[in-house]
Length: 476
Image (cartoon, rainbow, N blue to C red):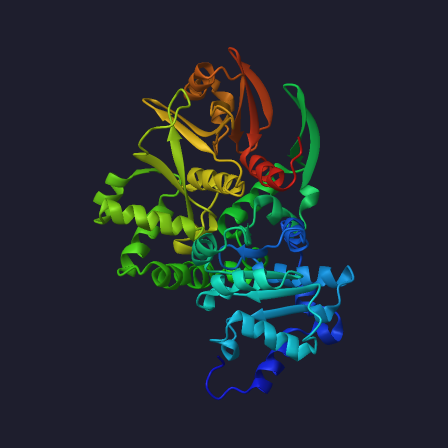
């Protein structure tokens, strides 16, 4: 139902205003001028999927470019011959539309464009859909009722969307998560692709494309900028926002999730308690934690901490990485685990930007690299730790869950010069019959042998770029 005093004419005028392509045949120049996220083709393919009757639920953290991606999708549909008057877009957070159900809004759209009878081949976009109660029930009904219409919804309250999508949308919704920028996307967004040189390398029986750079010093400067400011398109491109990241990222992204989205979804009574826990985790991103340790340091019960961590994960603010032992076996009880921010620039916003020699730089490099792996929904990374030993990233085979590869992340050149210090990595390789591993550096690219092992040394920035790029473009 419309708000009291709002007329149908006002609603129809607002809908026409939000759909300028009905008249101009194109989206606004403001959105047209923006670069497309490299995730765009993957999202577009879901929008164009008509053989399976499903709505697309576009979710992700705040400010990663979901609305811009929708506009770019609308423009692409128009350019491929879709009638602009068969494309509906509505931002649900518009006050004028507050309280109107999505089916009623859909009917208003049809009336506004004068296509109340012909319903075949329509595309309907509802942006910020979490502002409508029980949206998931009504969306499922629309999908079941209108077989020739593609429905796409999006929202920034990612935790709420995922929860309700899973509860009510089984078999009717396809979820697509738009993550923060990878380092690969950051380089592309800033027109820095000329810094990267692809080259072929023989790895066992495979020829792989790996990457080098024309200037590792310049690339490292951009890598540091990525760590401090690179998770969000607007922040990456704006020196004004970078001058005060707390005002933008903390207030507009972190606080809205912690103080509004999560409490309203899960009924959290003590918001400050959740905020304090997240702040402590963010400050120590990349460290190993236990529920006992967190409980003692925060004064929060272990059961409450477990719930808070699951909420923060659902909101795409953090990711828990589980531990394996020297033999690559998982622990029956996950008493110890690492927690990483899903985007290193969150830490800079909460505290302050760092420089390349900061004590915390090693942890932030590790956080940046892990954040690239988190984009791979099909692959789960682990870390290995045992008495007197640790390996930073380990991948397990999908069939028998045995260690398949290992990476040691270092923001230092020391381990190229002092290979004997890589004892933990060597022990892990020997125990699991692995022949090679990657060791990251500041600026050294090399390949060496130690006993029966081959170490591939690669600058951290290039490894970070490679993981992000291969996530979107498998190059094997």
